Length: 285
Image: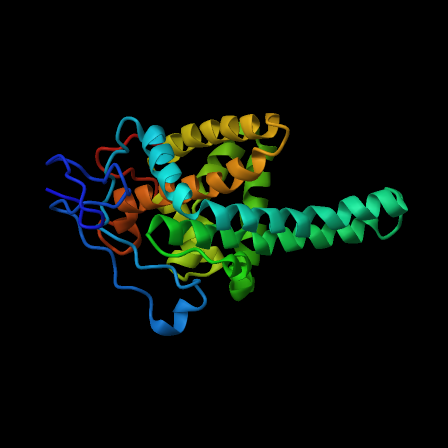
């Protein structure tokens, strides 16, 4: 058996190509739903259709973190230049105004809070550009610098996903840290679903919670690894952070592709989950 995308030979039981990360076709799993209608393609940033089948409750394999890092690094090497450029501009647009205002007028200036709120809102709408860029890169598409502004095409959905998700996480934190972490992990894929499936902000949160049942622990391990990677980047005179931060967005997109292939059928009626039932063969994350 060979990879249908890059032609690399695969083991008979392979579910993913070790080189390009593409899913292999394995029996008993429904195919990915048809691409979104053409009138939605602009809203979702012209992300290529998702490859491969989608399962229900397929356990995350051993070595999942290493697999995400290897696949993400291979993808980043192809699209890293434009991703680093996007992150540099993102940093300038979101950090430079507040930094400049503080040093020119001081922290106690009455307009200081306005500047901070403005840059926070700008950051909220610019960050989804890395979601779109990450998905395009992982699926073999061409990342463009203008992807940075993809979030402005879905203003309402991005606002609802960010604000409602933040409120839910904050409420979880009020009941102790652990519930807040569980909520954050469960809602972590909402941004990808907004752009990959074209759903609204509230629906993306519901879908993410359903998609992540059984995979929160796997994502937590990946996030711990990403924290370490970015700490190392920051220690490299902070210059390395401008590489590790955009690399992180690619690794998160790789994980979304994996969990979509492991459990995405629950979003399309193929073994939909109800209540608190766990998918077969998967331990709750």
